Image (tube, rainbow, N blue to C red):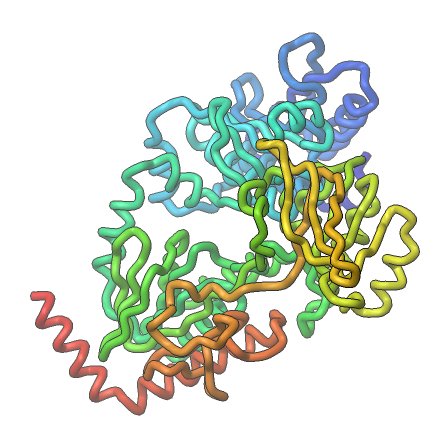
Amino acid sequence: MLDANLKTQLKSYLEKVSKPIELVASVDDSAKSQELLALLNDIATLSERVTVVERRGDSERKPSFSIGEAGKGSGIRFAGIPLGHEFTSLVLALLQVGGHPVKLDDAVIEQIRSLDGDYQFETYFSLSCQNCPEVVQALNVMALINPRIRHVAIDGALFQNEVDARQIMAVPTMFLNGETFGQGRSGVKEILAKLDTNAGARAAKELENKPVFDTLIVGGGPAGAAAAIYSARKGIATGVVAERFGGQVLDTLAIENFVSVTETEGPTFATALEQHVKAYDVDIMDVQRAEALIPGRIHEVRLANGAVLKAKTIILATGARWREINVPGEREYRNHGVAYCPHCDGPLFKGKRVAVIGGGNSGVEAAIDLAGLVREVTLLEFGATLRADEVLQRKLRSLPNVTVVTQAQTTEITGDGKKVNGLIYKDLASGEVKNVELEGVFVQIGLVPNTEWLKGTLELSKHGEIVVDARGATSVPGVFAAGDVTTVPFKQIVIAVGEGAKASLSAFDHLIRNSEEVAVAVEAEAEAAV
């Protein structure tokens, strides 16, 4: 089942196991059950501490298996064969159940242990989804820490009947005690924030007690990470506040153009960014959303939980998000047929009809990827020609189940009240309105900057980007910006990293040149707080 290379790697990992592990497989006579047994038996041959128990006729999903200490019940179960992106989740579960330390802060571990109630989580994933492993791994570790938490990770492509019955059209999708709990990428802290209703108030109180930072970076993507590293290396008090560390990189499948890194994946790159930042004395405040910037001699950033952070200089690196087409039906059917990540959600549309909106590189790449999974792909482009690179267009034209429609203005996404059933577009050449019957719509029309919270505070371009000069300075003295959120052209990771470093150096230069004025302002703030 596992190739020689994977066996060698897994064997070295399993040498770290200190407790006996029991893999209890619930199987039947299906080919997938035999495939699962082959995988589990391969794992057992790599460590004398791993044993496999086979069960038939029980009430568990088939094929599925639990991972637990020998002779004890387990709250961790995989329904399916966790290869692809989920192989890492399998390895981590084996190590953690086998006694390898969990990499969480003591306070977070205690918060998990203290949760009051019984929690039965179900997560639907796809093996090609790069966002799913974080959710699976988070809930697995929570189930390991708290015996009242149980988690089963379900391969949606394998259990298509459940996906259809529950009308799941996006992954990861989480259910708690039979009810929808959430969709999309989430880590331990995000999940805890939803379960522990007092967590927000405690976090706000803790954040209010933070001292005045020399530099506060808002955003944890490549630009924010670079800014944090460069600021910390100057020896100044540096903080990072972000909704999720890694930013949009977490939603990127393959990265092949970051200089010196031949090839990597977005989540792997984001983890490396966070580890690099944590190597320095940086105060990382994640799972926090900035709501307002209040400029002054000492700048303030108000968070959604009500806390206010203060800093002598600010670097805004809030990045961008997928642009919406803003037509009727888009928001109503988001995650119910309307999707933005073909790699994540594509397997859920196997054998179905889908549309891709957008004829740039992202749209054409999405159509190519989806063509190998779905029955039909209709690609709609507003302009007269596709804008993607010619090599991608050639590949697209070679696919028999792809139809390209140019000069097509999408006007509505239709549905039956529960899920998408069609798309309406206007033929700009003839003026004719046409309907396409389908089950999914993938929107791929670029990005929009995350600057709504900054309107009226500093200068924005007509596209909503933060206007910056050659040094990364904004229209507000002491406030700088970097990355995809700015007017700097070419939204690339390598450019965002460079711009983050530049903004940090500019902020440091501002601190030096205005040190006396800033010192007076800090002293005034301290006196006012007494």
